[in-house]
Image 1 (cartoon, helix red, strand yellow):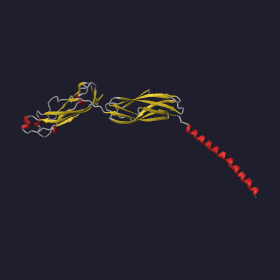
Image 2 (image 1 turned 30 degrees about the horizontal axis):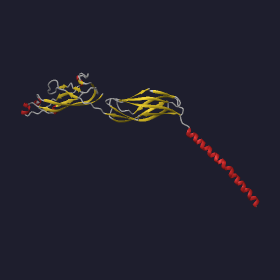
Image 3 (image 1 turned 45 degrees about the vertical axis):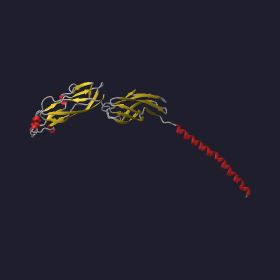
Amino acid sequence: MRKTGIPLRALFLALVVALVPMVTLAASTGQGNALANVGKVSKGITVTLSPSSRTVDQGQSASYSVSASSIGGFTGQVTFAVVGLPTGAAAQWQPSSVLLSSGSTAQATLTVTTSPATPAGRSDFTLKATSGTTQASVQAQLHVLEVKRNFAVSGSVDGMLAPGVSRALDLQISNPGNKSIAVTNLSVAISQVVRTPTAVAANLPCTTADYKLIQYSGQYPLTVVPGTRSLSALGDSEALWPRIQMLDTAQLQDGCKGATLKLTYSGTGQAN
């Protein structure tokens, strides 16, 4: 029995020794395959933008540098696009597309042009680079600053007002600066009705309720060069000018005879 047991133990140990190298070899082979898979890069493109944020005045332009790169041996024509620009802003590319060879990088310039009507504030937009079904994108920001210019508006009623009669105001816009401005939001209001001494003595009423204002109905913005320009000089027809109408009411309106209307004007002027 002793002679039989010794050879069995020797055989078991030999099997263990023989199996260890096999297990080690299998682990090594598995690790090699994993490393090979990690090192494999899919074909595609990457796109970067510099700087990632720009600040610009309303009506002005901002430029970004764009880089498109080939990865994984990608080759092809790449075109650019922008999504999410604010109202009144437009994108221009130079060049509009680039040709990538394997491992190469190409440069382009993105210029974003705003208008005087572009809302002030921060806008997040997306730049996209596309070649067939291959696409890459990057986020960017545009900070638009509101720029206002000082200007003056004046006007007067040409002719007498009477019940049921309206008169147009050919507004005068004065730009004291040395650059043109874009004018919007013109408005006229009656701040006071000054009755004649006779109407006051007779206690005859006349108030702003006896009048109706029709505001300017032309197209904005109005481009006003340095100096003073009237609505007619800017090419607007009289039908577009603001108007004041004296209402024809059932109430006695003798207090409005000879009355003087004091008008106030407002508007927004932005850098052009």
